[in-house]
Amino acid sequence: MNSSSPSYVRIFDTSLRDGEQAPGASMTSAEKLEVARALARLGVDVIEAGFPAASPDDLAAVQAIAAEVGQVPVEGRPQAEPPVICGLARCTRSDIEAAWNGVKGAKRPRIHTFLATSDIHLQHKLRMSRAEMTARAVEMVAYAKTFCADIEFSPEDAGRSDPEFLYTVLEAVIKAGATTLNIPDTVGYTMPDEFGALIAGIIGKTPGAKDVVISVHCHDDLGMAVANSLAGLRAGARQAEVTINGIGERAGNASLEEVVMAIRTRGEKLGLTTGIDATQLCRTSKLVSRSTSYPVPPNKSIVGANAFAHESGIHQDGMIKNAQTYEIMRPEDVGATQTMLVLGKHSGRAAFSKRLTELGYPLDGDALLKAFNGFKKLADRKKAVHDADLIALASDERTTVPELWALDNLQVVCGTTGLPTATVRLRDPDGKTHVHAAIGTGPVDATYKAIDAIVKVPVTLLEFGINGVTEGIDALAEATVRVRHEEQRSSHGHGADTDIVVASAKAYIASLNHVLSRQSSGRAQHPQKTGTPTAVAQ
Ligand code: KIV
Ligand code: ZN
Image (tube, rainbow, N blue to C red):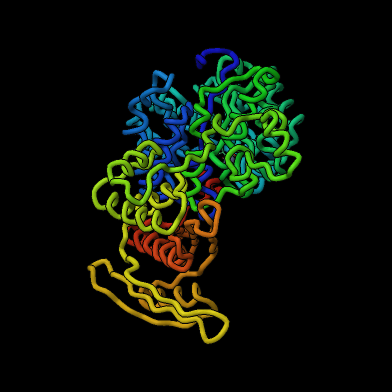
């Protein structure tokens, strides 16, 4: 579908910016680049790659995405151009300069600047009058325009702003050069009929609105983000700002996969289309989940493990007779088919490597060898090896966090009698081994205590989770850990193994490596997205 068609909805993905602002969802630059590649394969029109003023790391990640993903269209996709690469900026000169620095290497760069319009934000956060706010927005849009032709402006908290004031501000920023007007329901407060009416009002009553793209950006605090986005699109907006798996501030943003599949499945009713290759949805969802260590709930629409599972006898009977009885989408439409690997324990490395590449997880050198050894071990223990197992094995090797400390050996004693005890041997960054034994409330606790005694980086364990990658008692276990060290943003790690204590140890060590690599790169806390009055007034 041609993007100039009146029914075409531009998909603006903000997983790397709003999504990354979710507590604990921070990604390394390499992880962000990998996600950006996947977003381009998915066919998104715009990638909001980050908030370059936030830190030197954020700037570097946006630059790397602009230079690679923003340069060449993805092979085999209908889009003739690479995606637009966008950087966020508060309405300050320094933020706008940083955003431009981030995106200028892209073929199609965009600066996205924002300033709040609701009275509650103006009075309590910005301490500005409506006239001052309008003047600053106009000045900063005009300043951004000196760098870049493609400018997006967002009146933050538009959902709680006076519509008449919004029309005035939006008219003024269009005159100053804004080409996309994004209307955020920042706090997820509106209902679909209200949000639809807000968009219709903006399009009908703002002079110049018909010559720019109107965009929707809805948060999910009341669970309305997708419904509100669709209401806005039905009212005439033609860009939807969304995130993979709906990650984002607080309750998150509208989920990309839900908005896209609603448009696709109910296309006739909605009269809308997108350029998304839906068969990439599950794969992209898994990548984002892994990169952020945000698990996807099994009942999550479209990409959850149970989204296409039928448990009750009545449903199964219907499905056997005709899948349409209980399925409005086919699993293959969203790339949710579970392929069983035909490789067995006698298969060679070439076939293994080929399958990983087909799955989008290419490996080579040492990483391939280690993953292959893991596969052999797994094939020995497990009746059937699924693609999900391979992805878990490959992900462990594709970690972009340097492996400073590594697990060399682990032995635990536990059960109903005696004290759970773990003996851990770790390899330090210089290859030297260290051994420690500890007791704990259980085998994982004992293991973590022994690791702490060796690595000596004090952290608070915020979250610990363990899941079977596939079904069955012989399944590969995947552990996810989130920790916090002092004032740093939280760090995460994951590890996979058929032994759940080993998987837990690997995940914990990976999270400590994340903490240590951040210490050495000096990445500070994430600054507040919505700048303080002094930041805005500078
Ligand atoms: O939710 C919001 O208001 C935002 C803006 C920066 C667009 O994320
Ligand atoms: Zn937002």
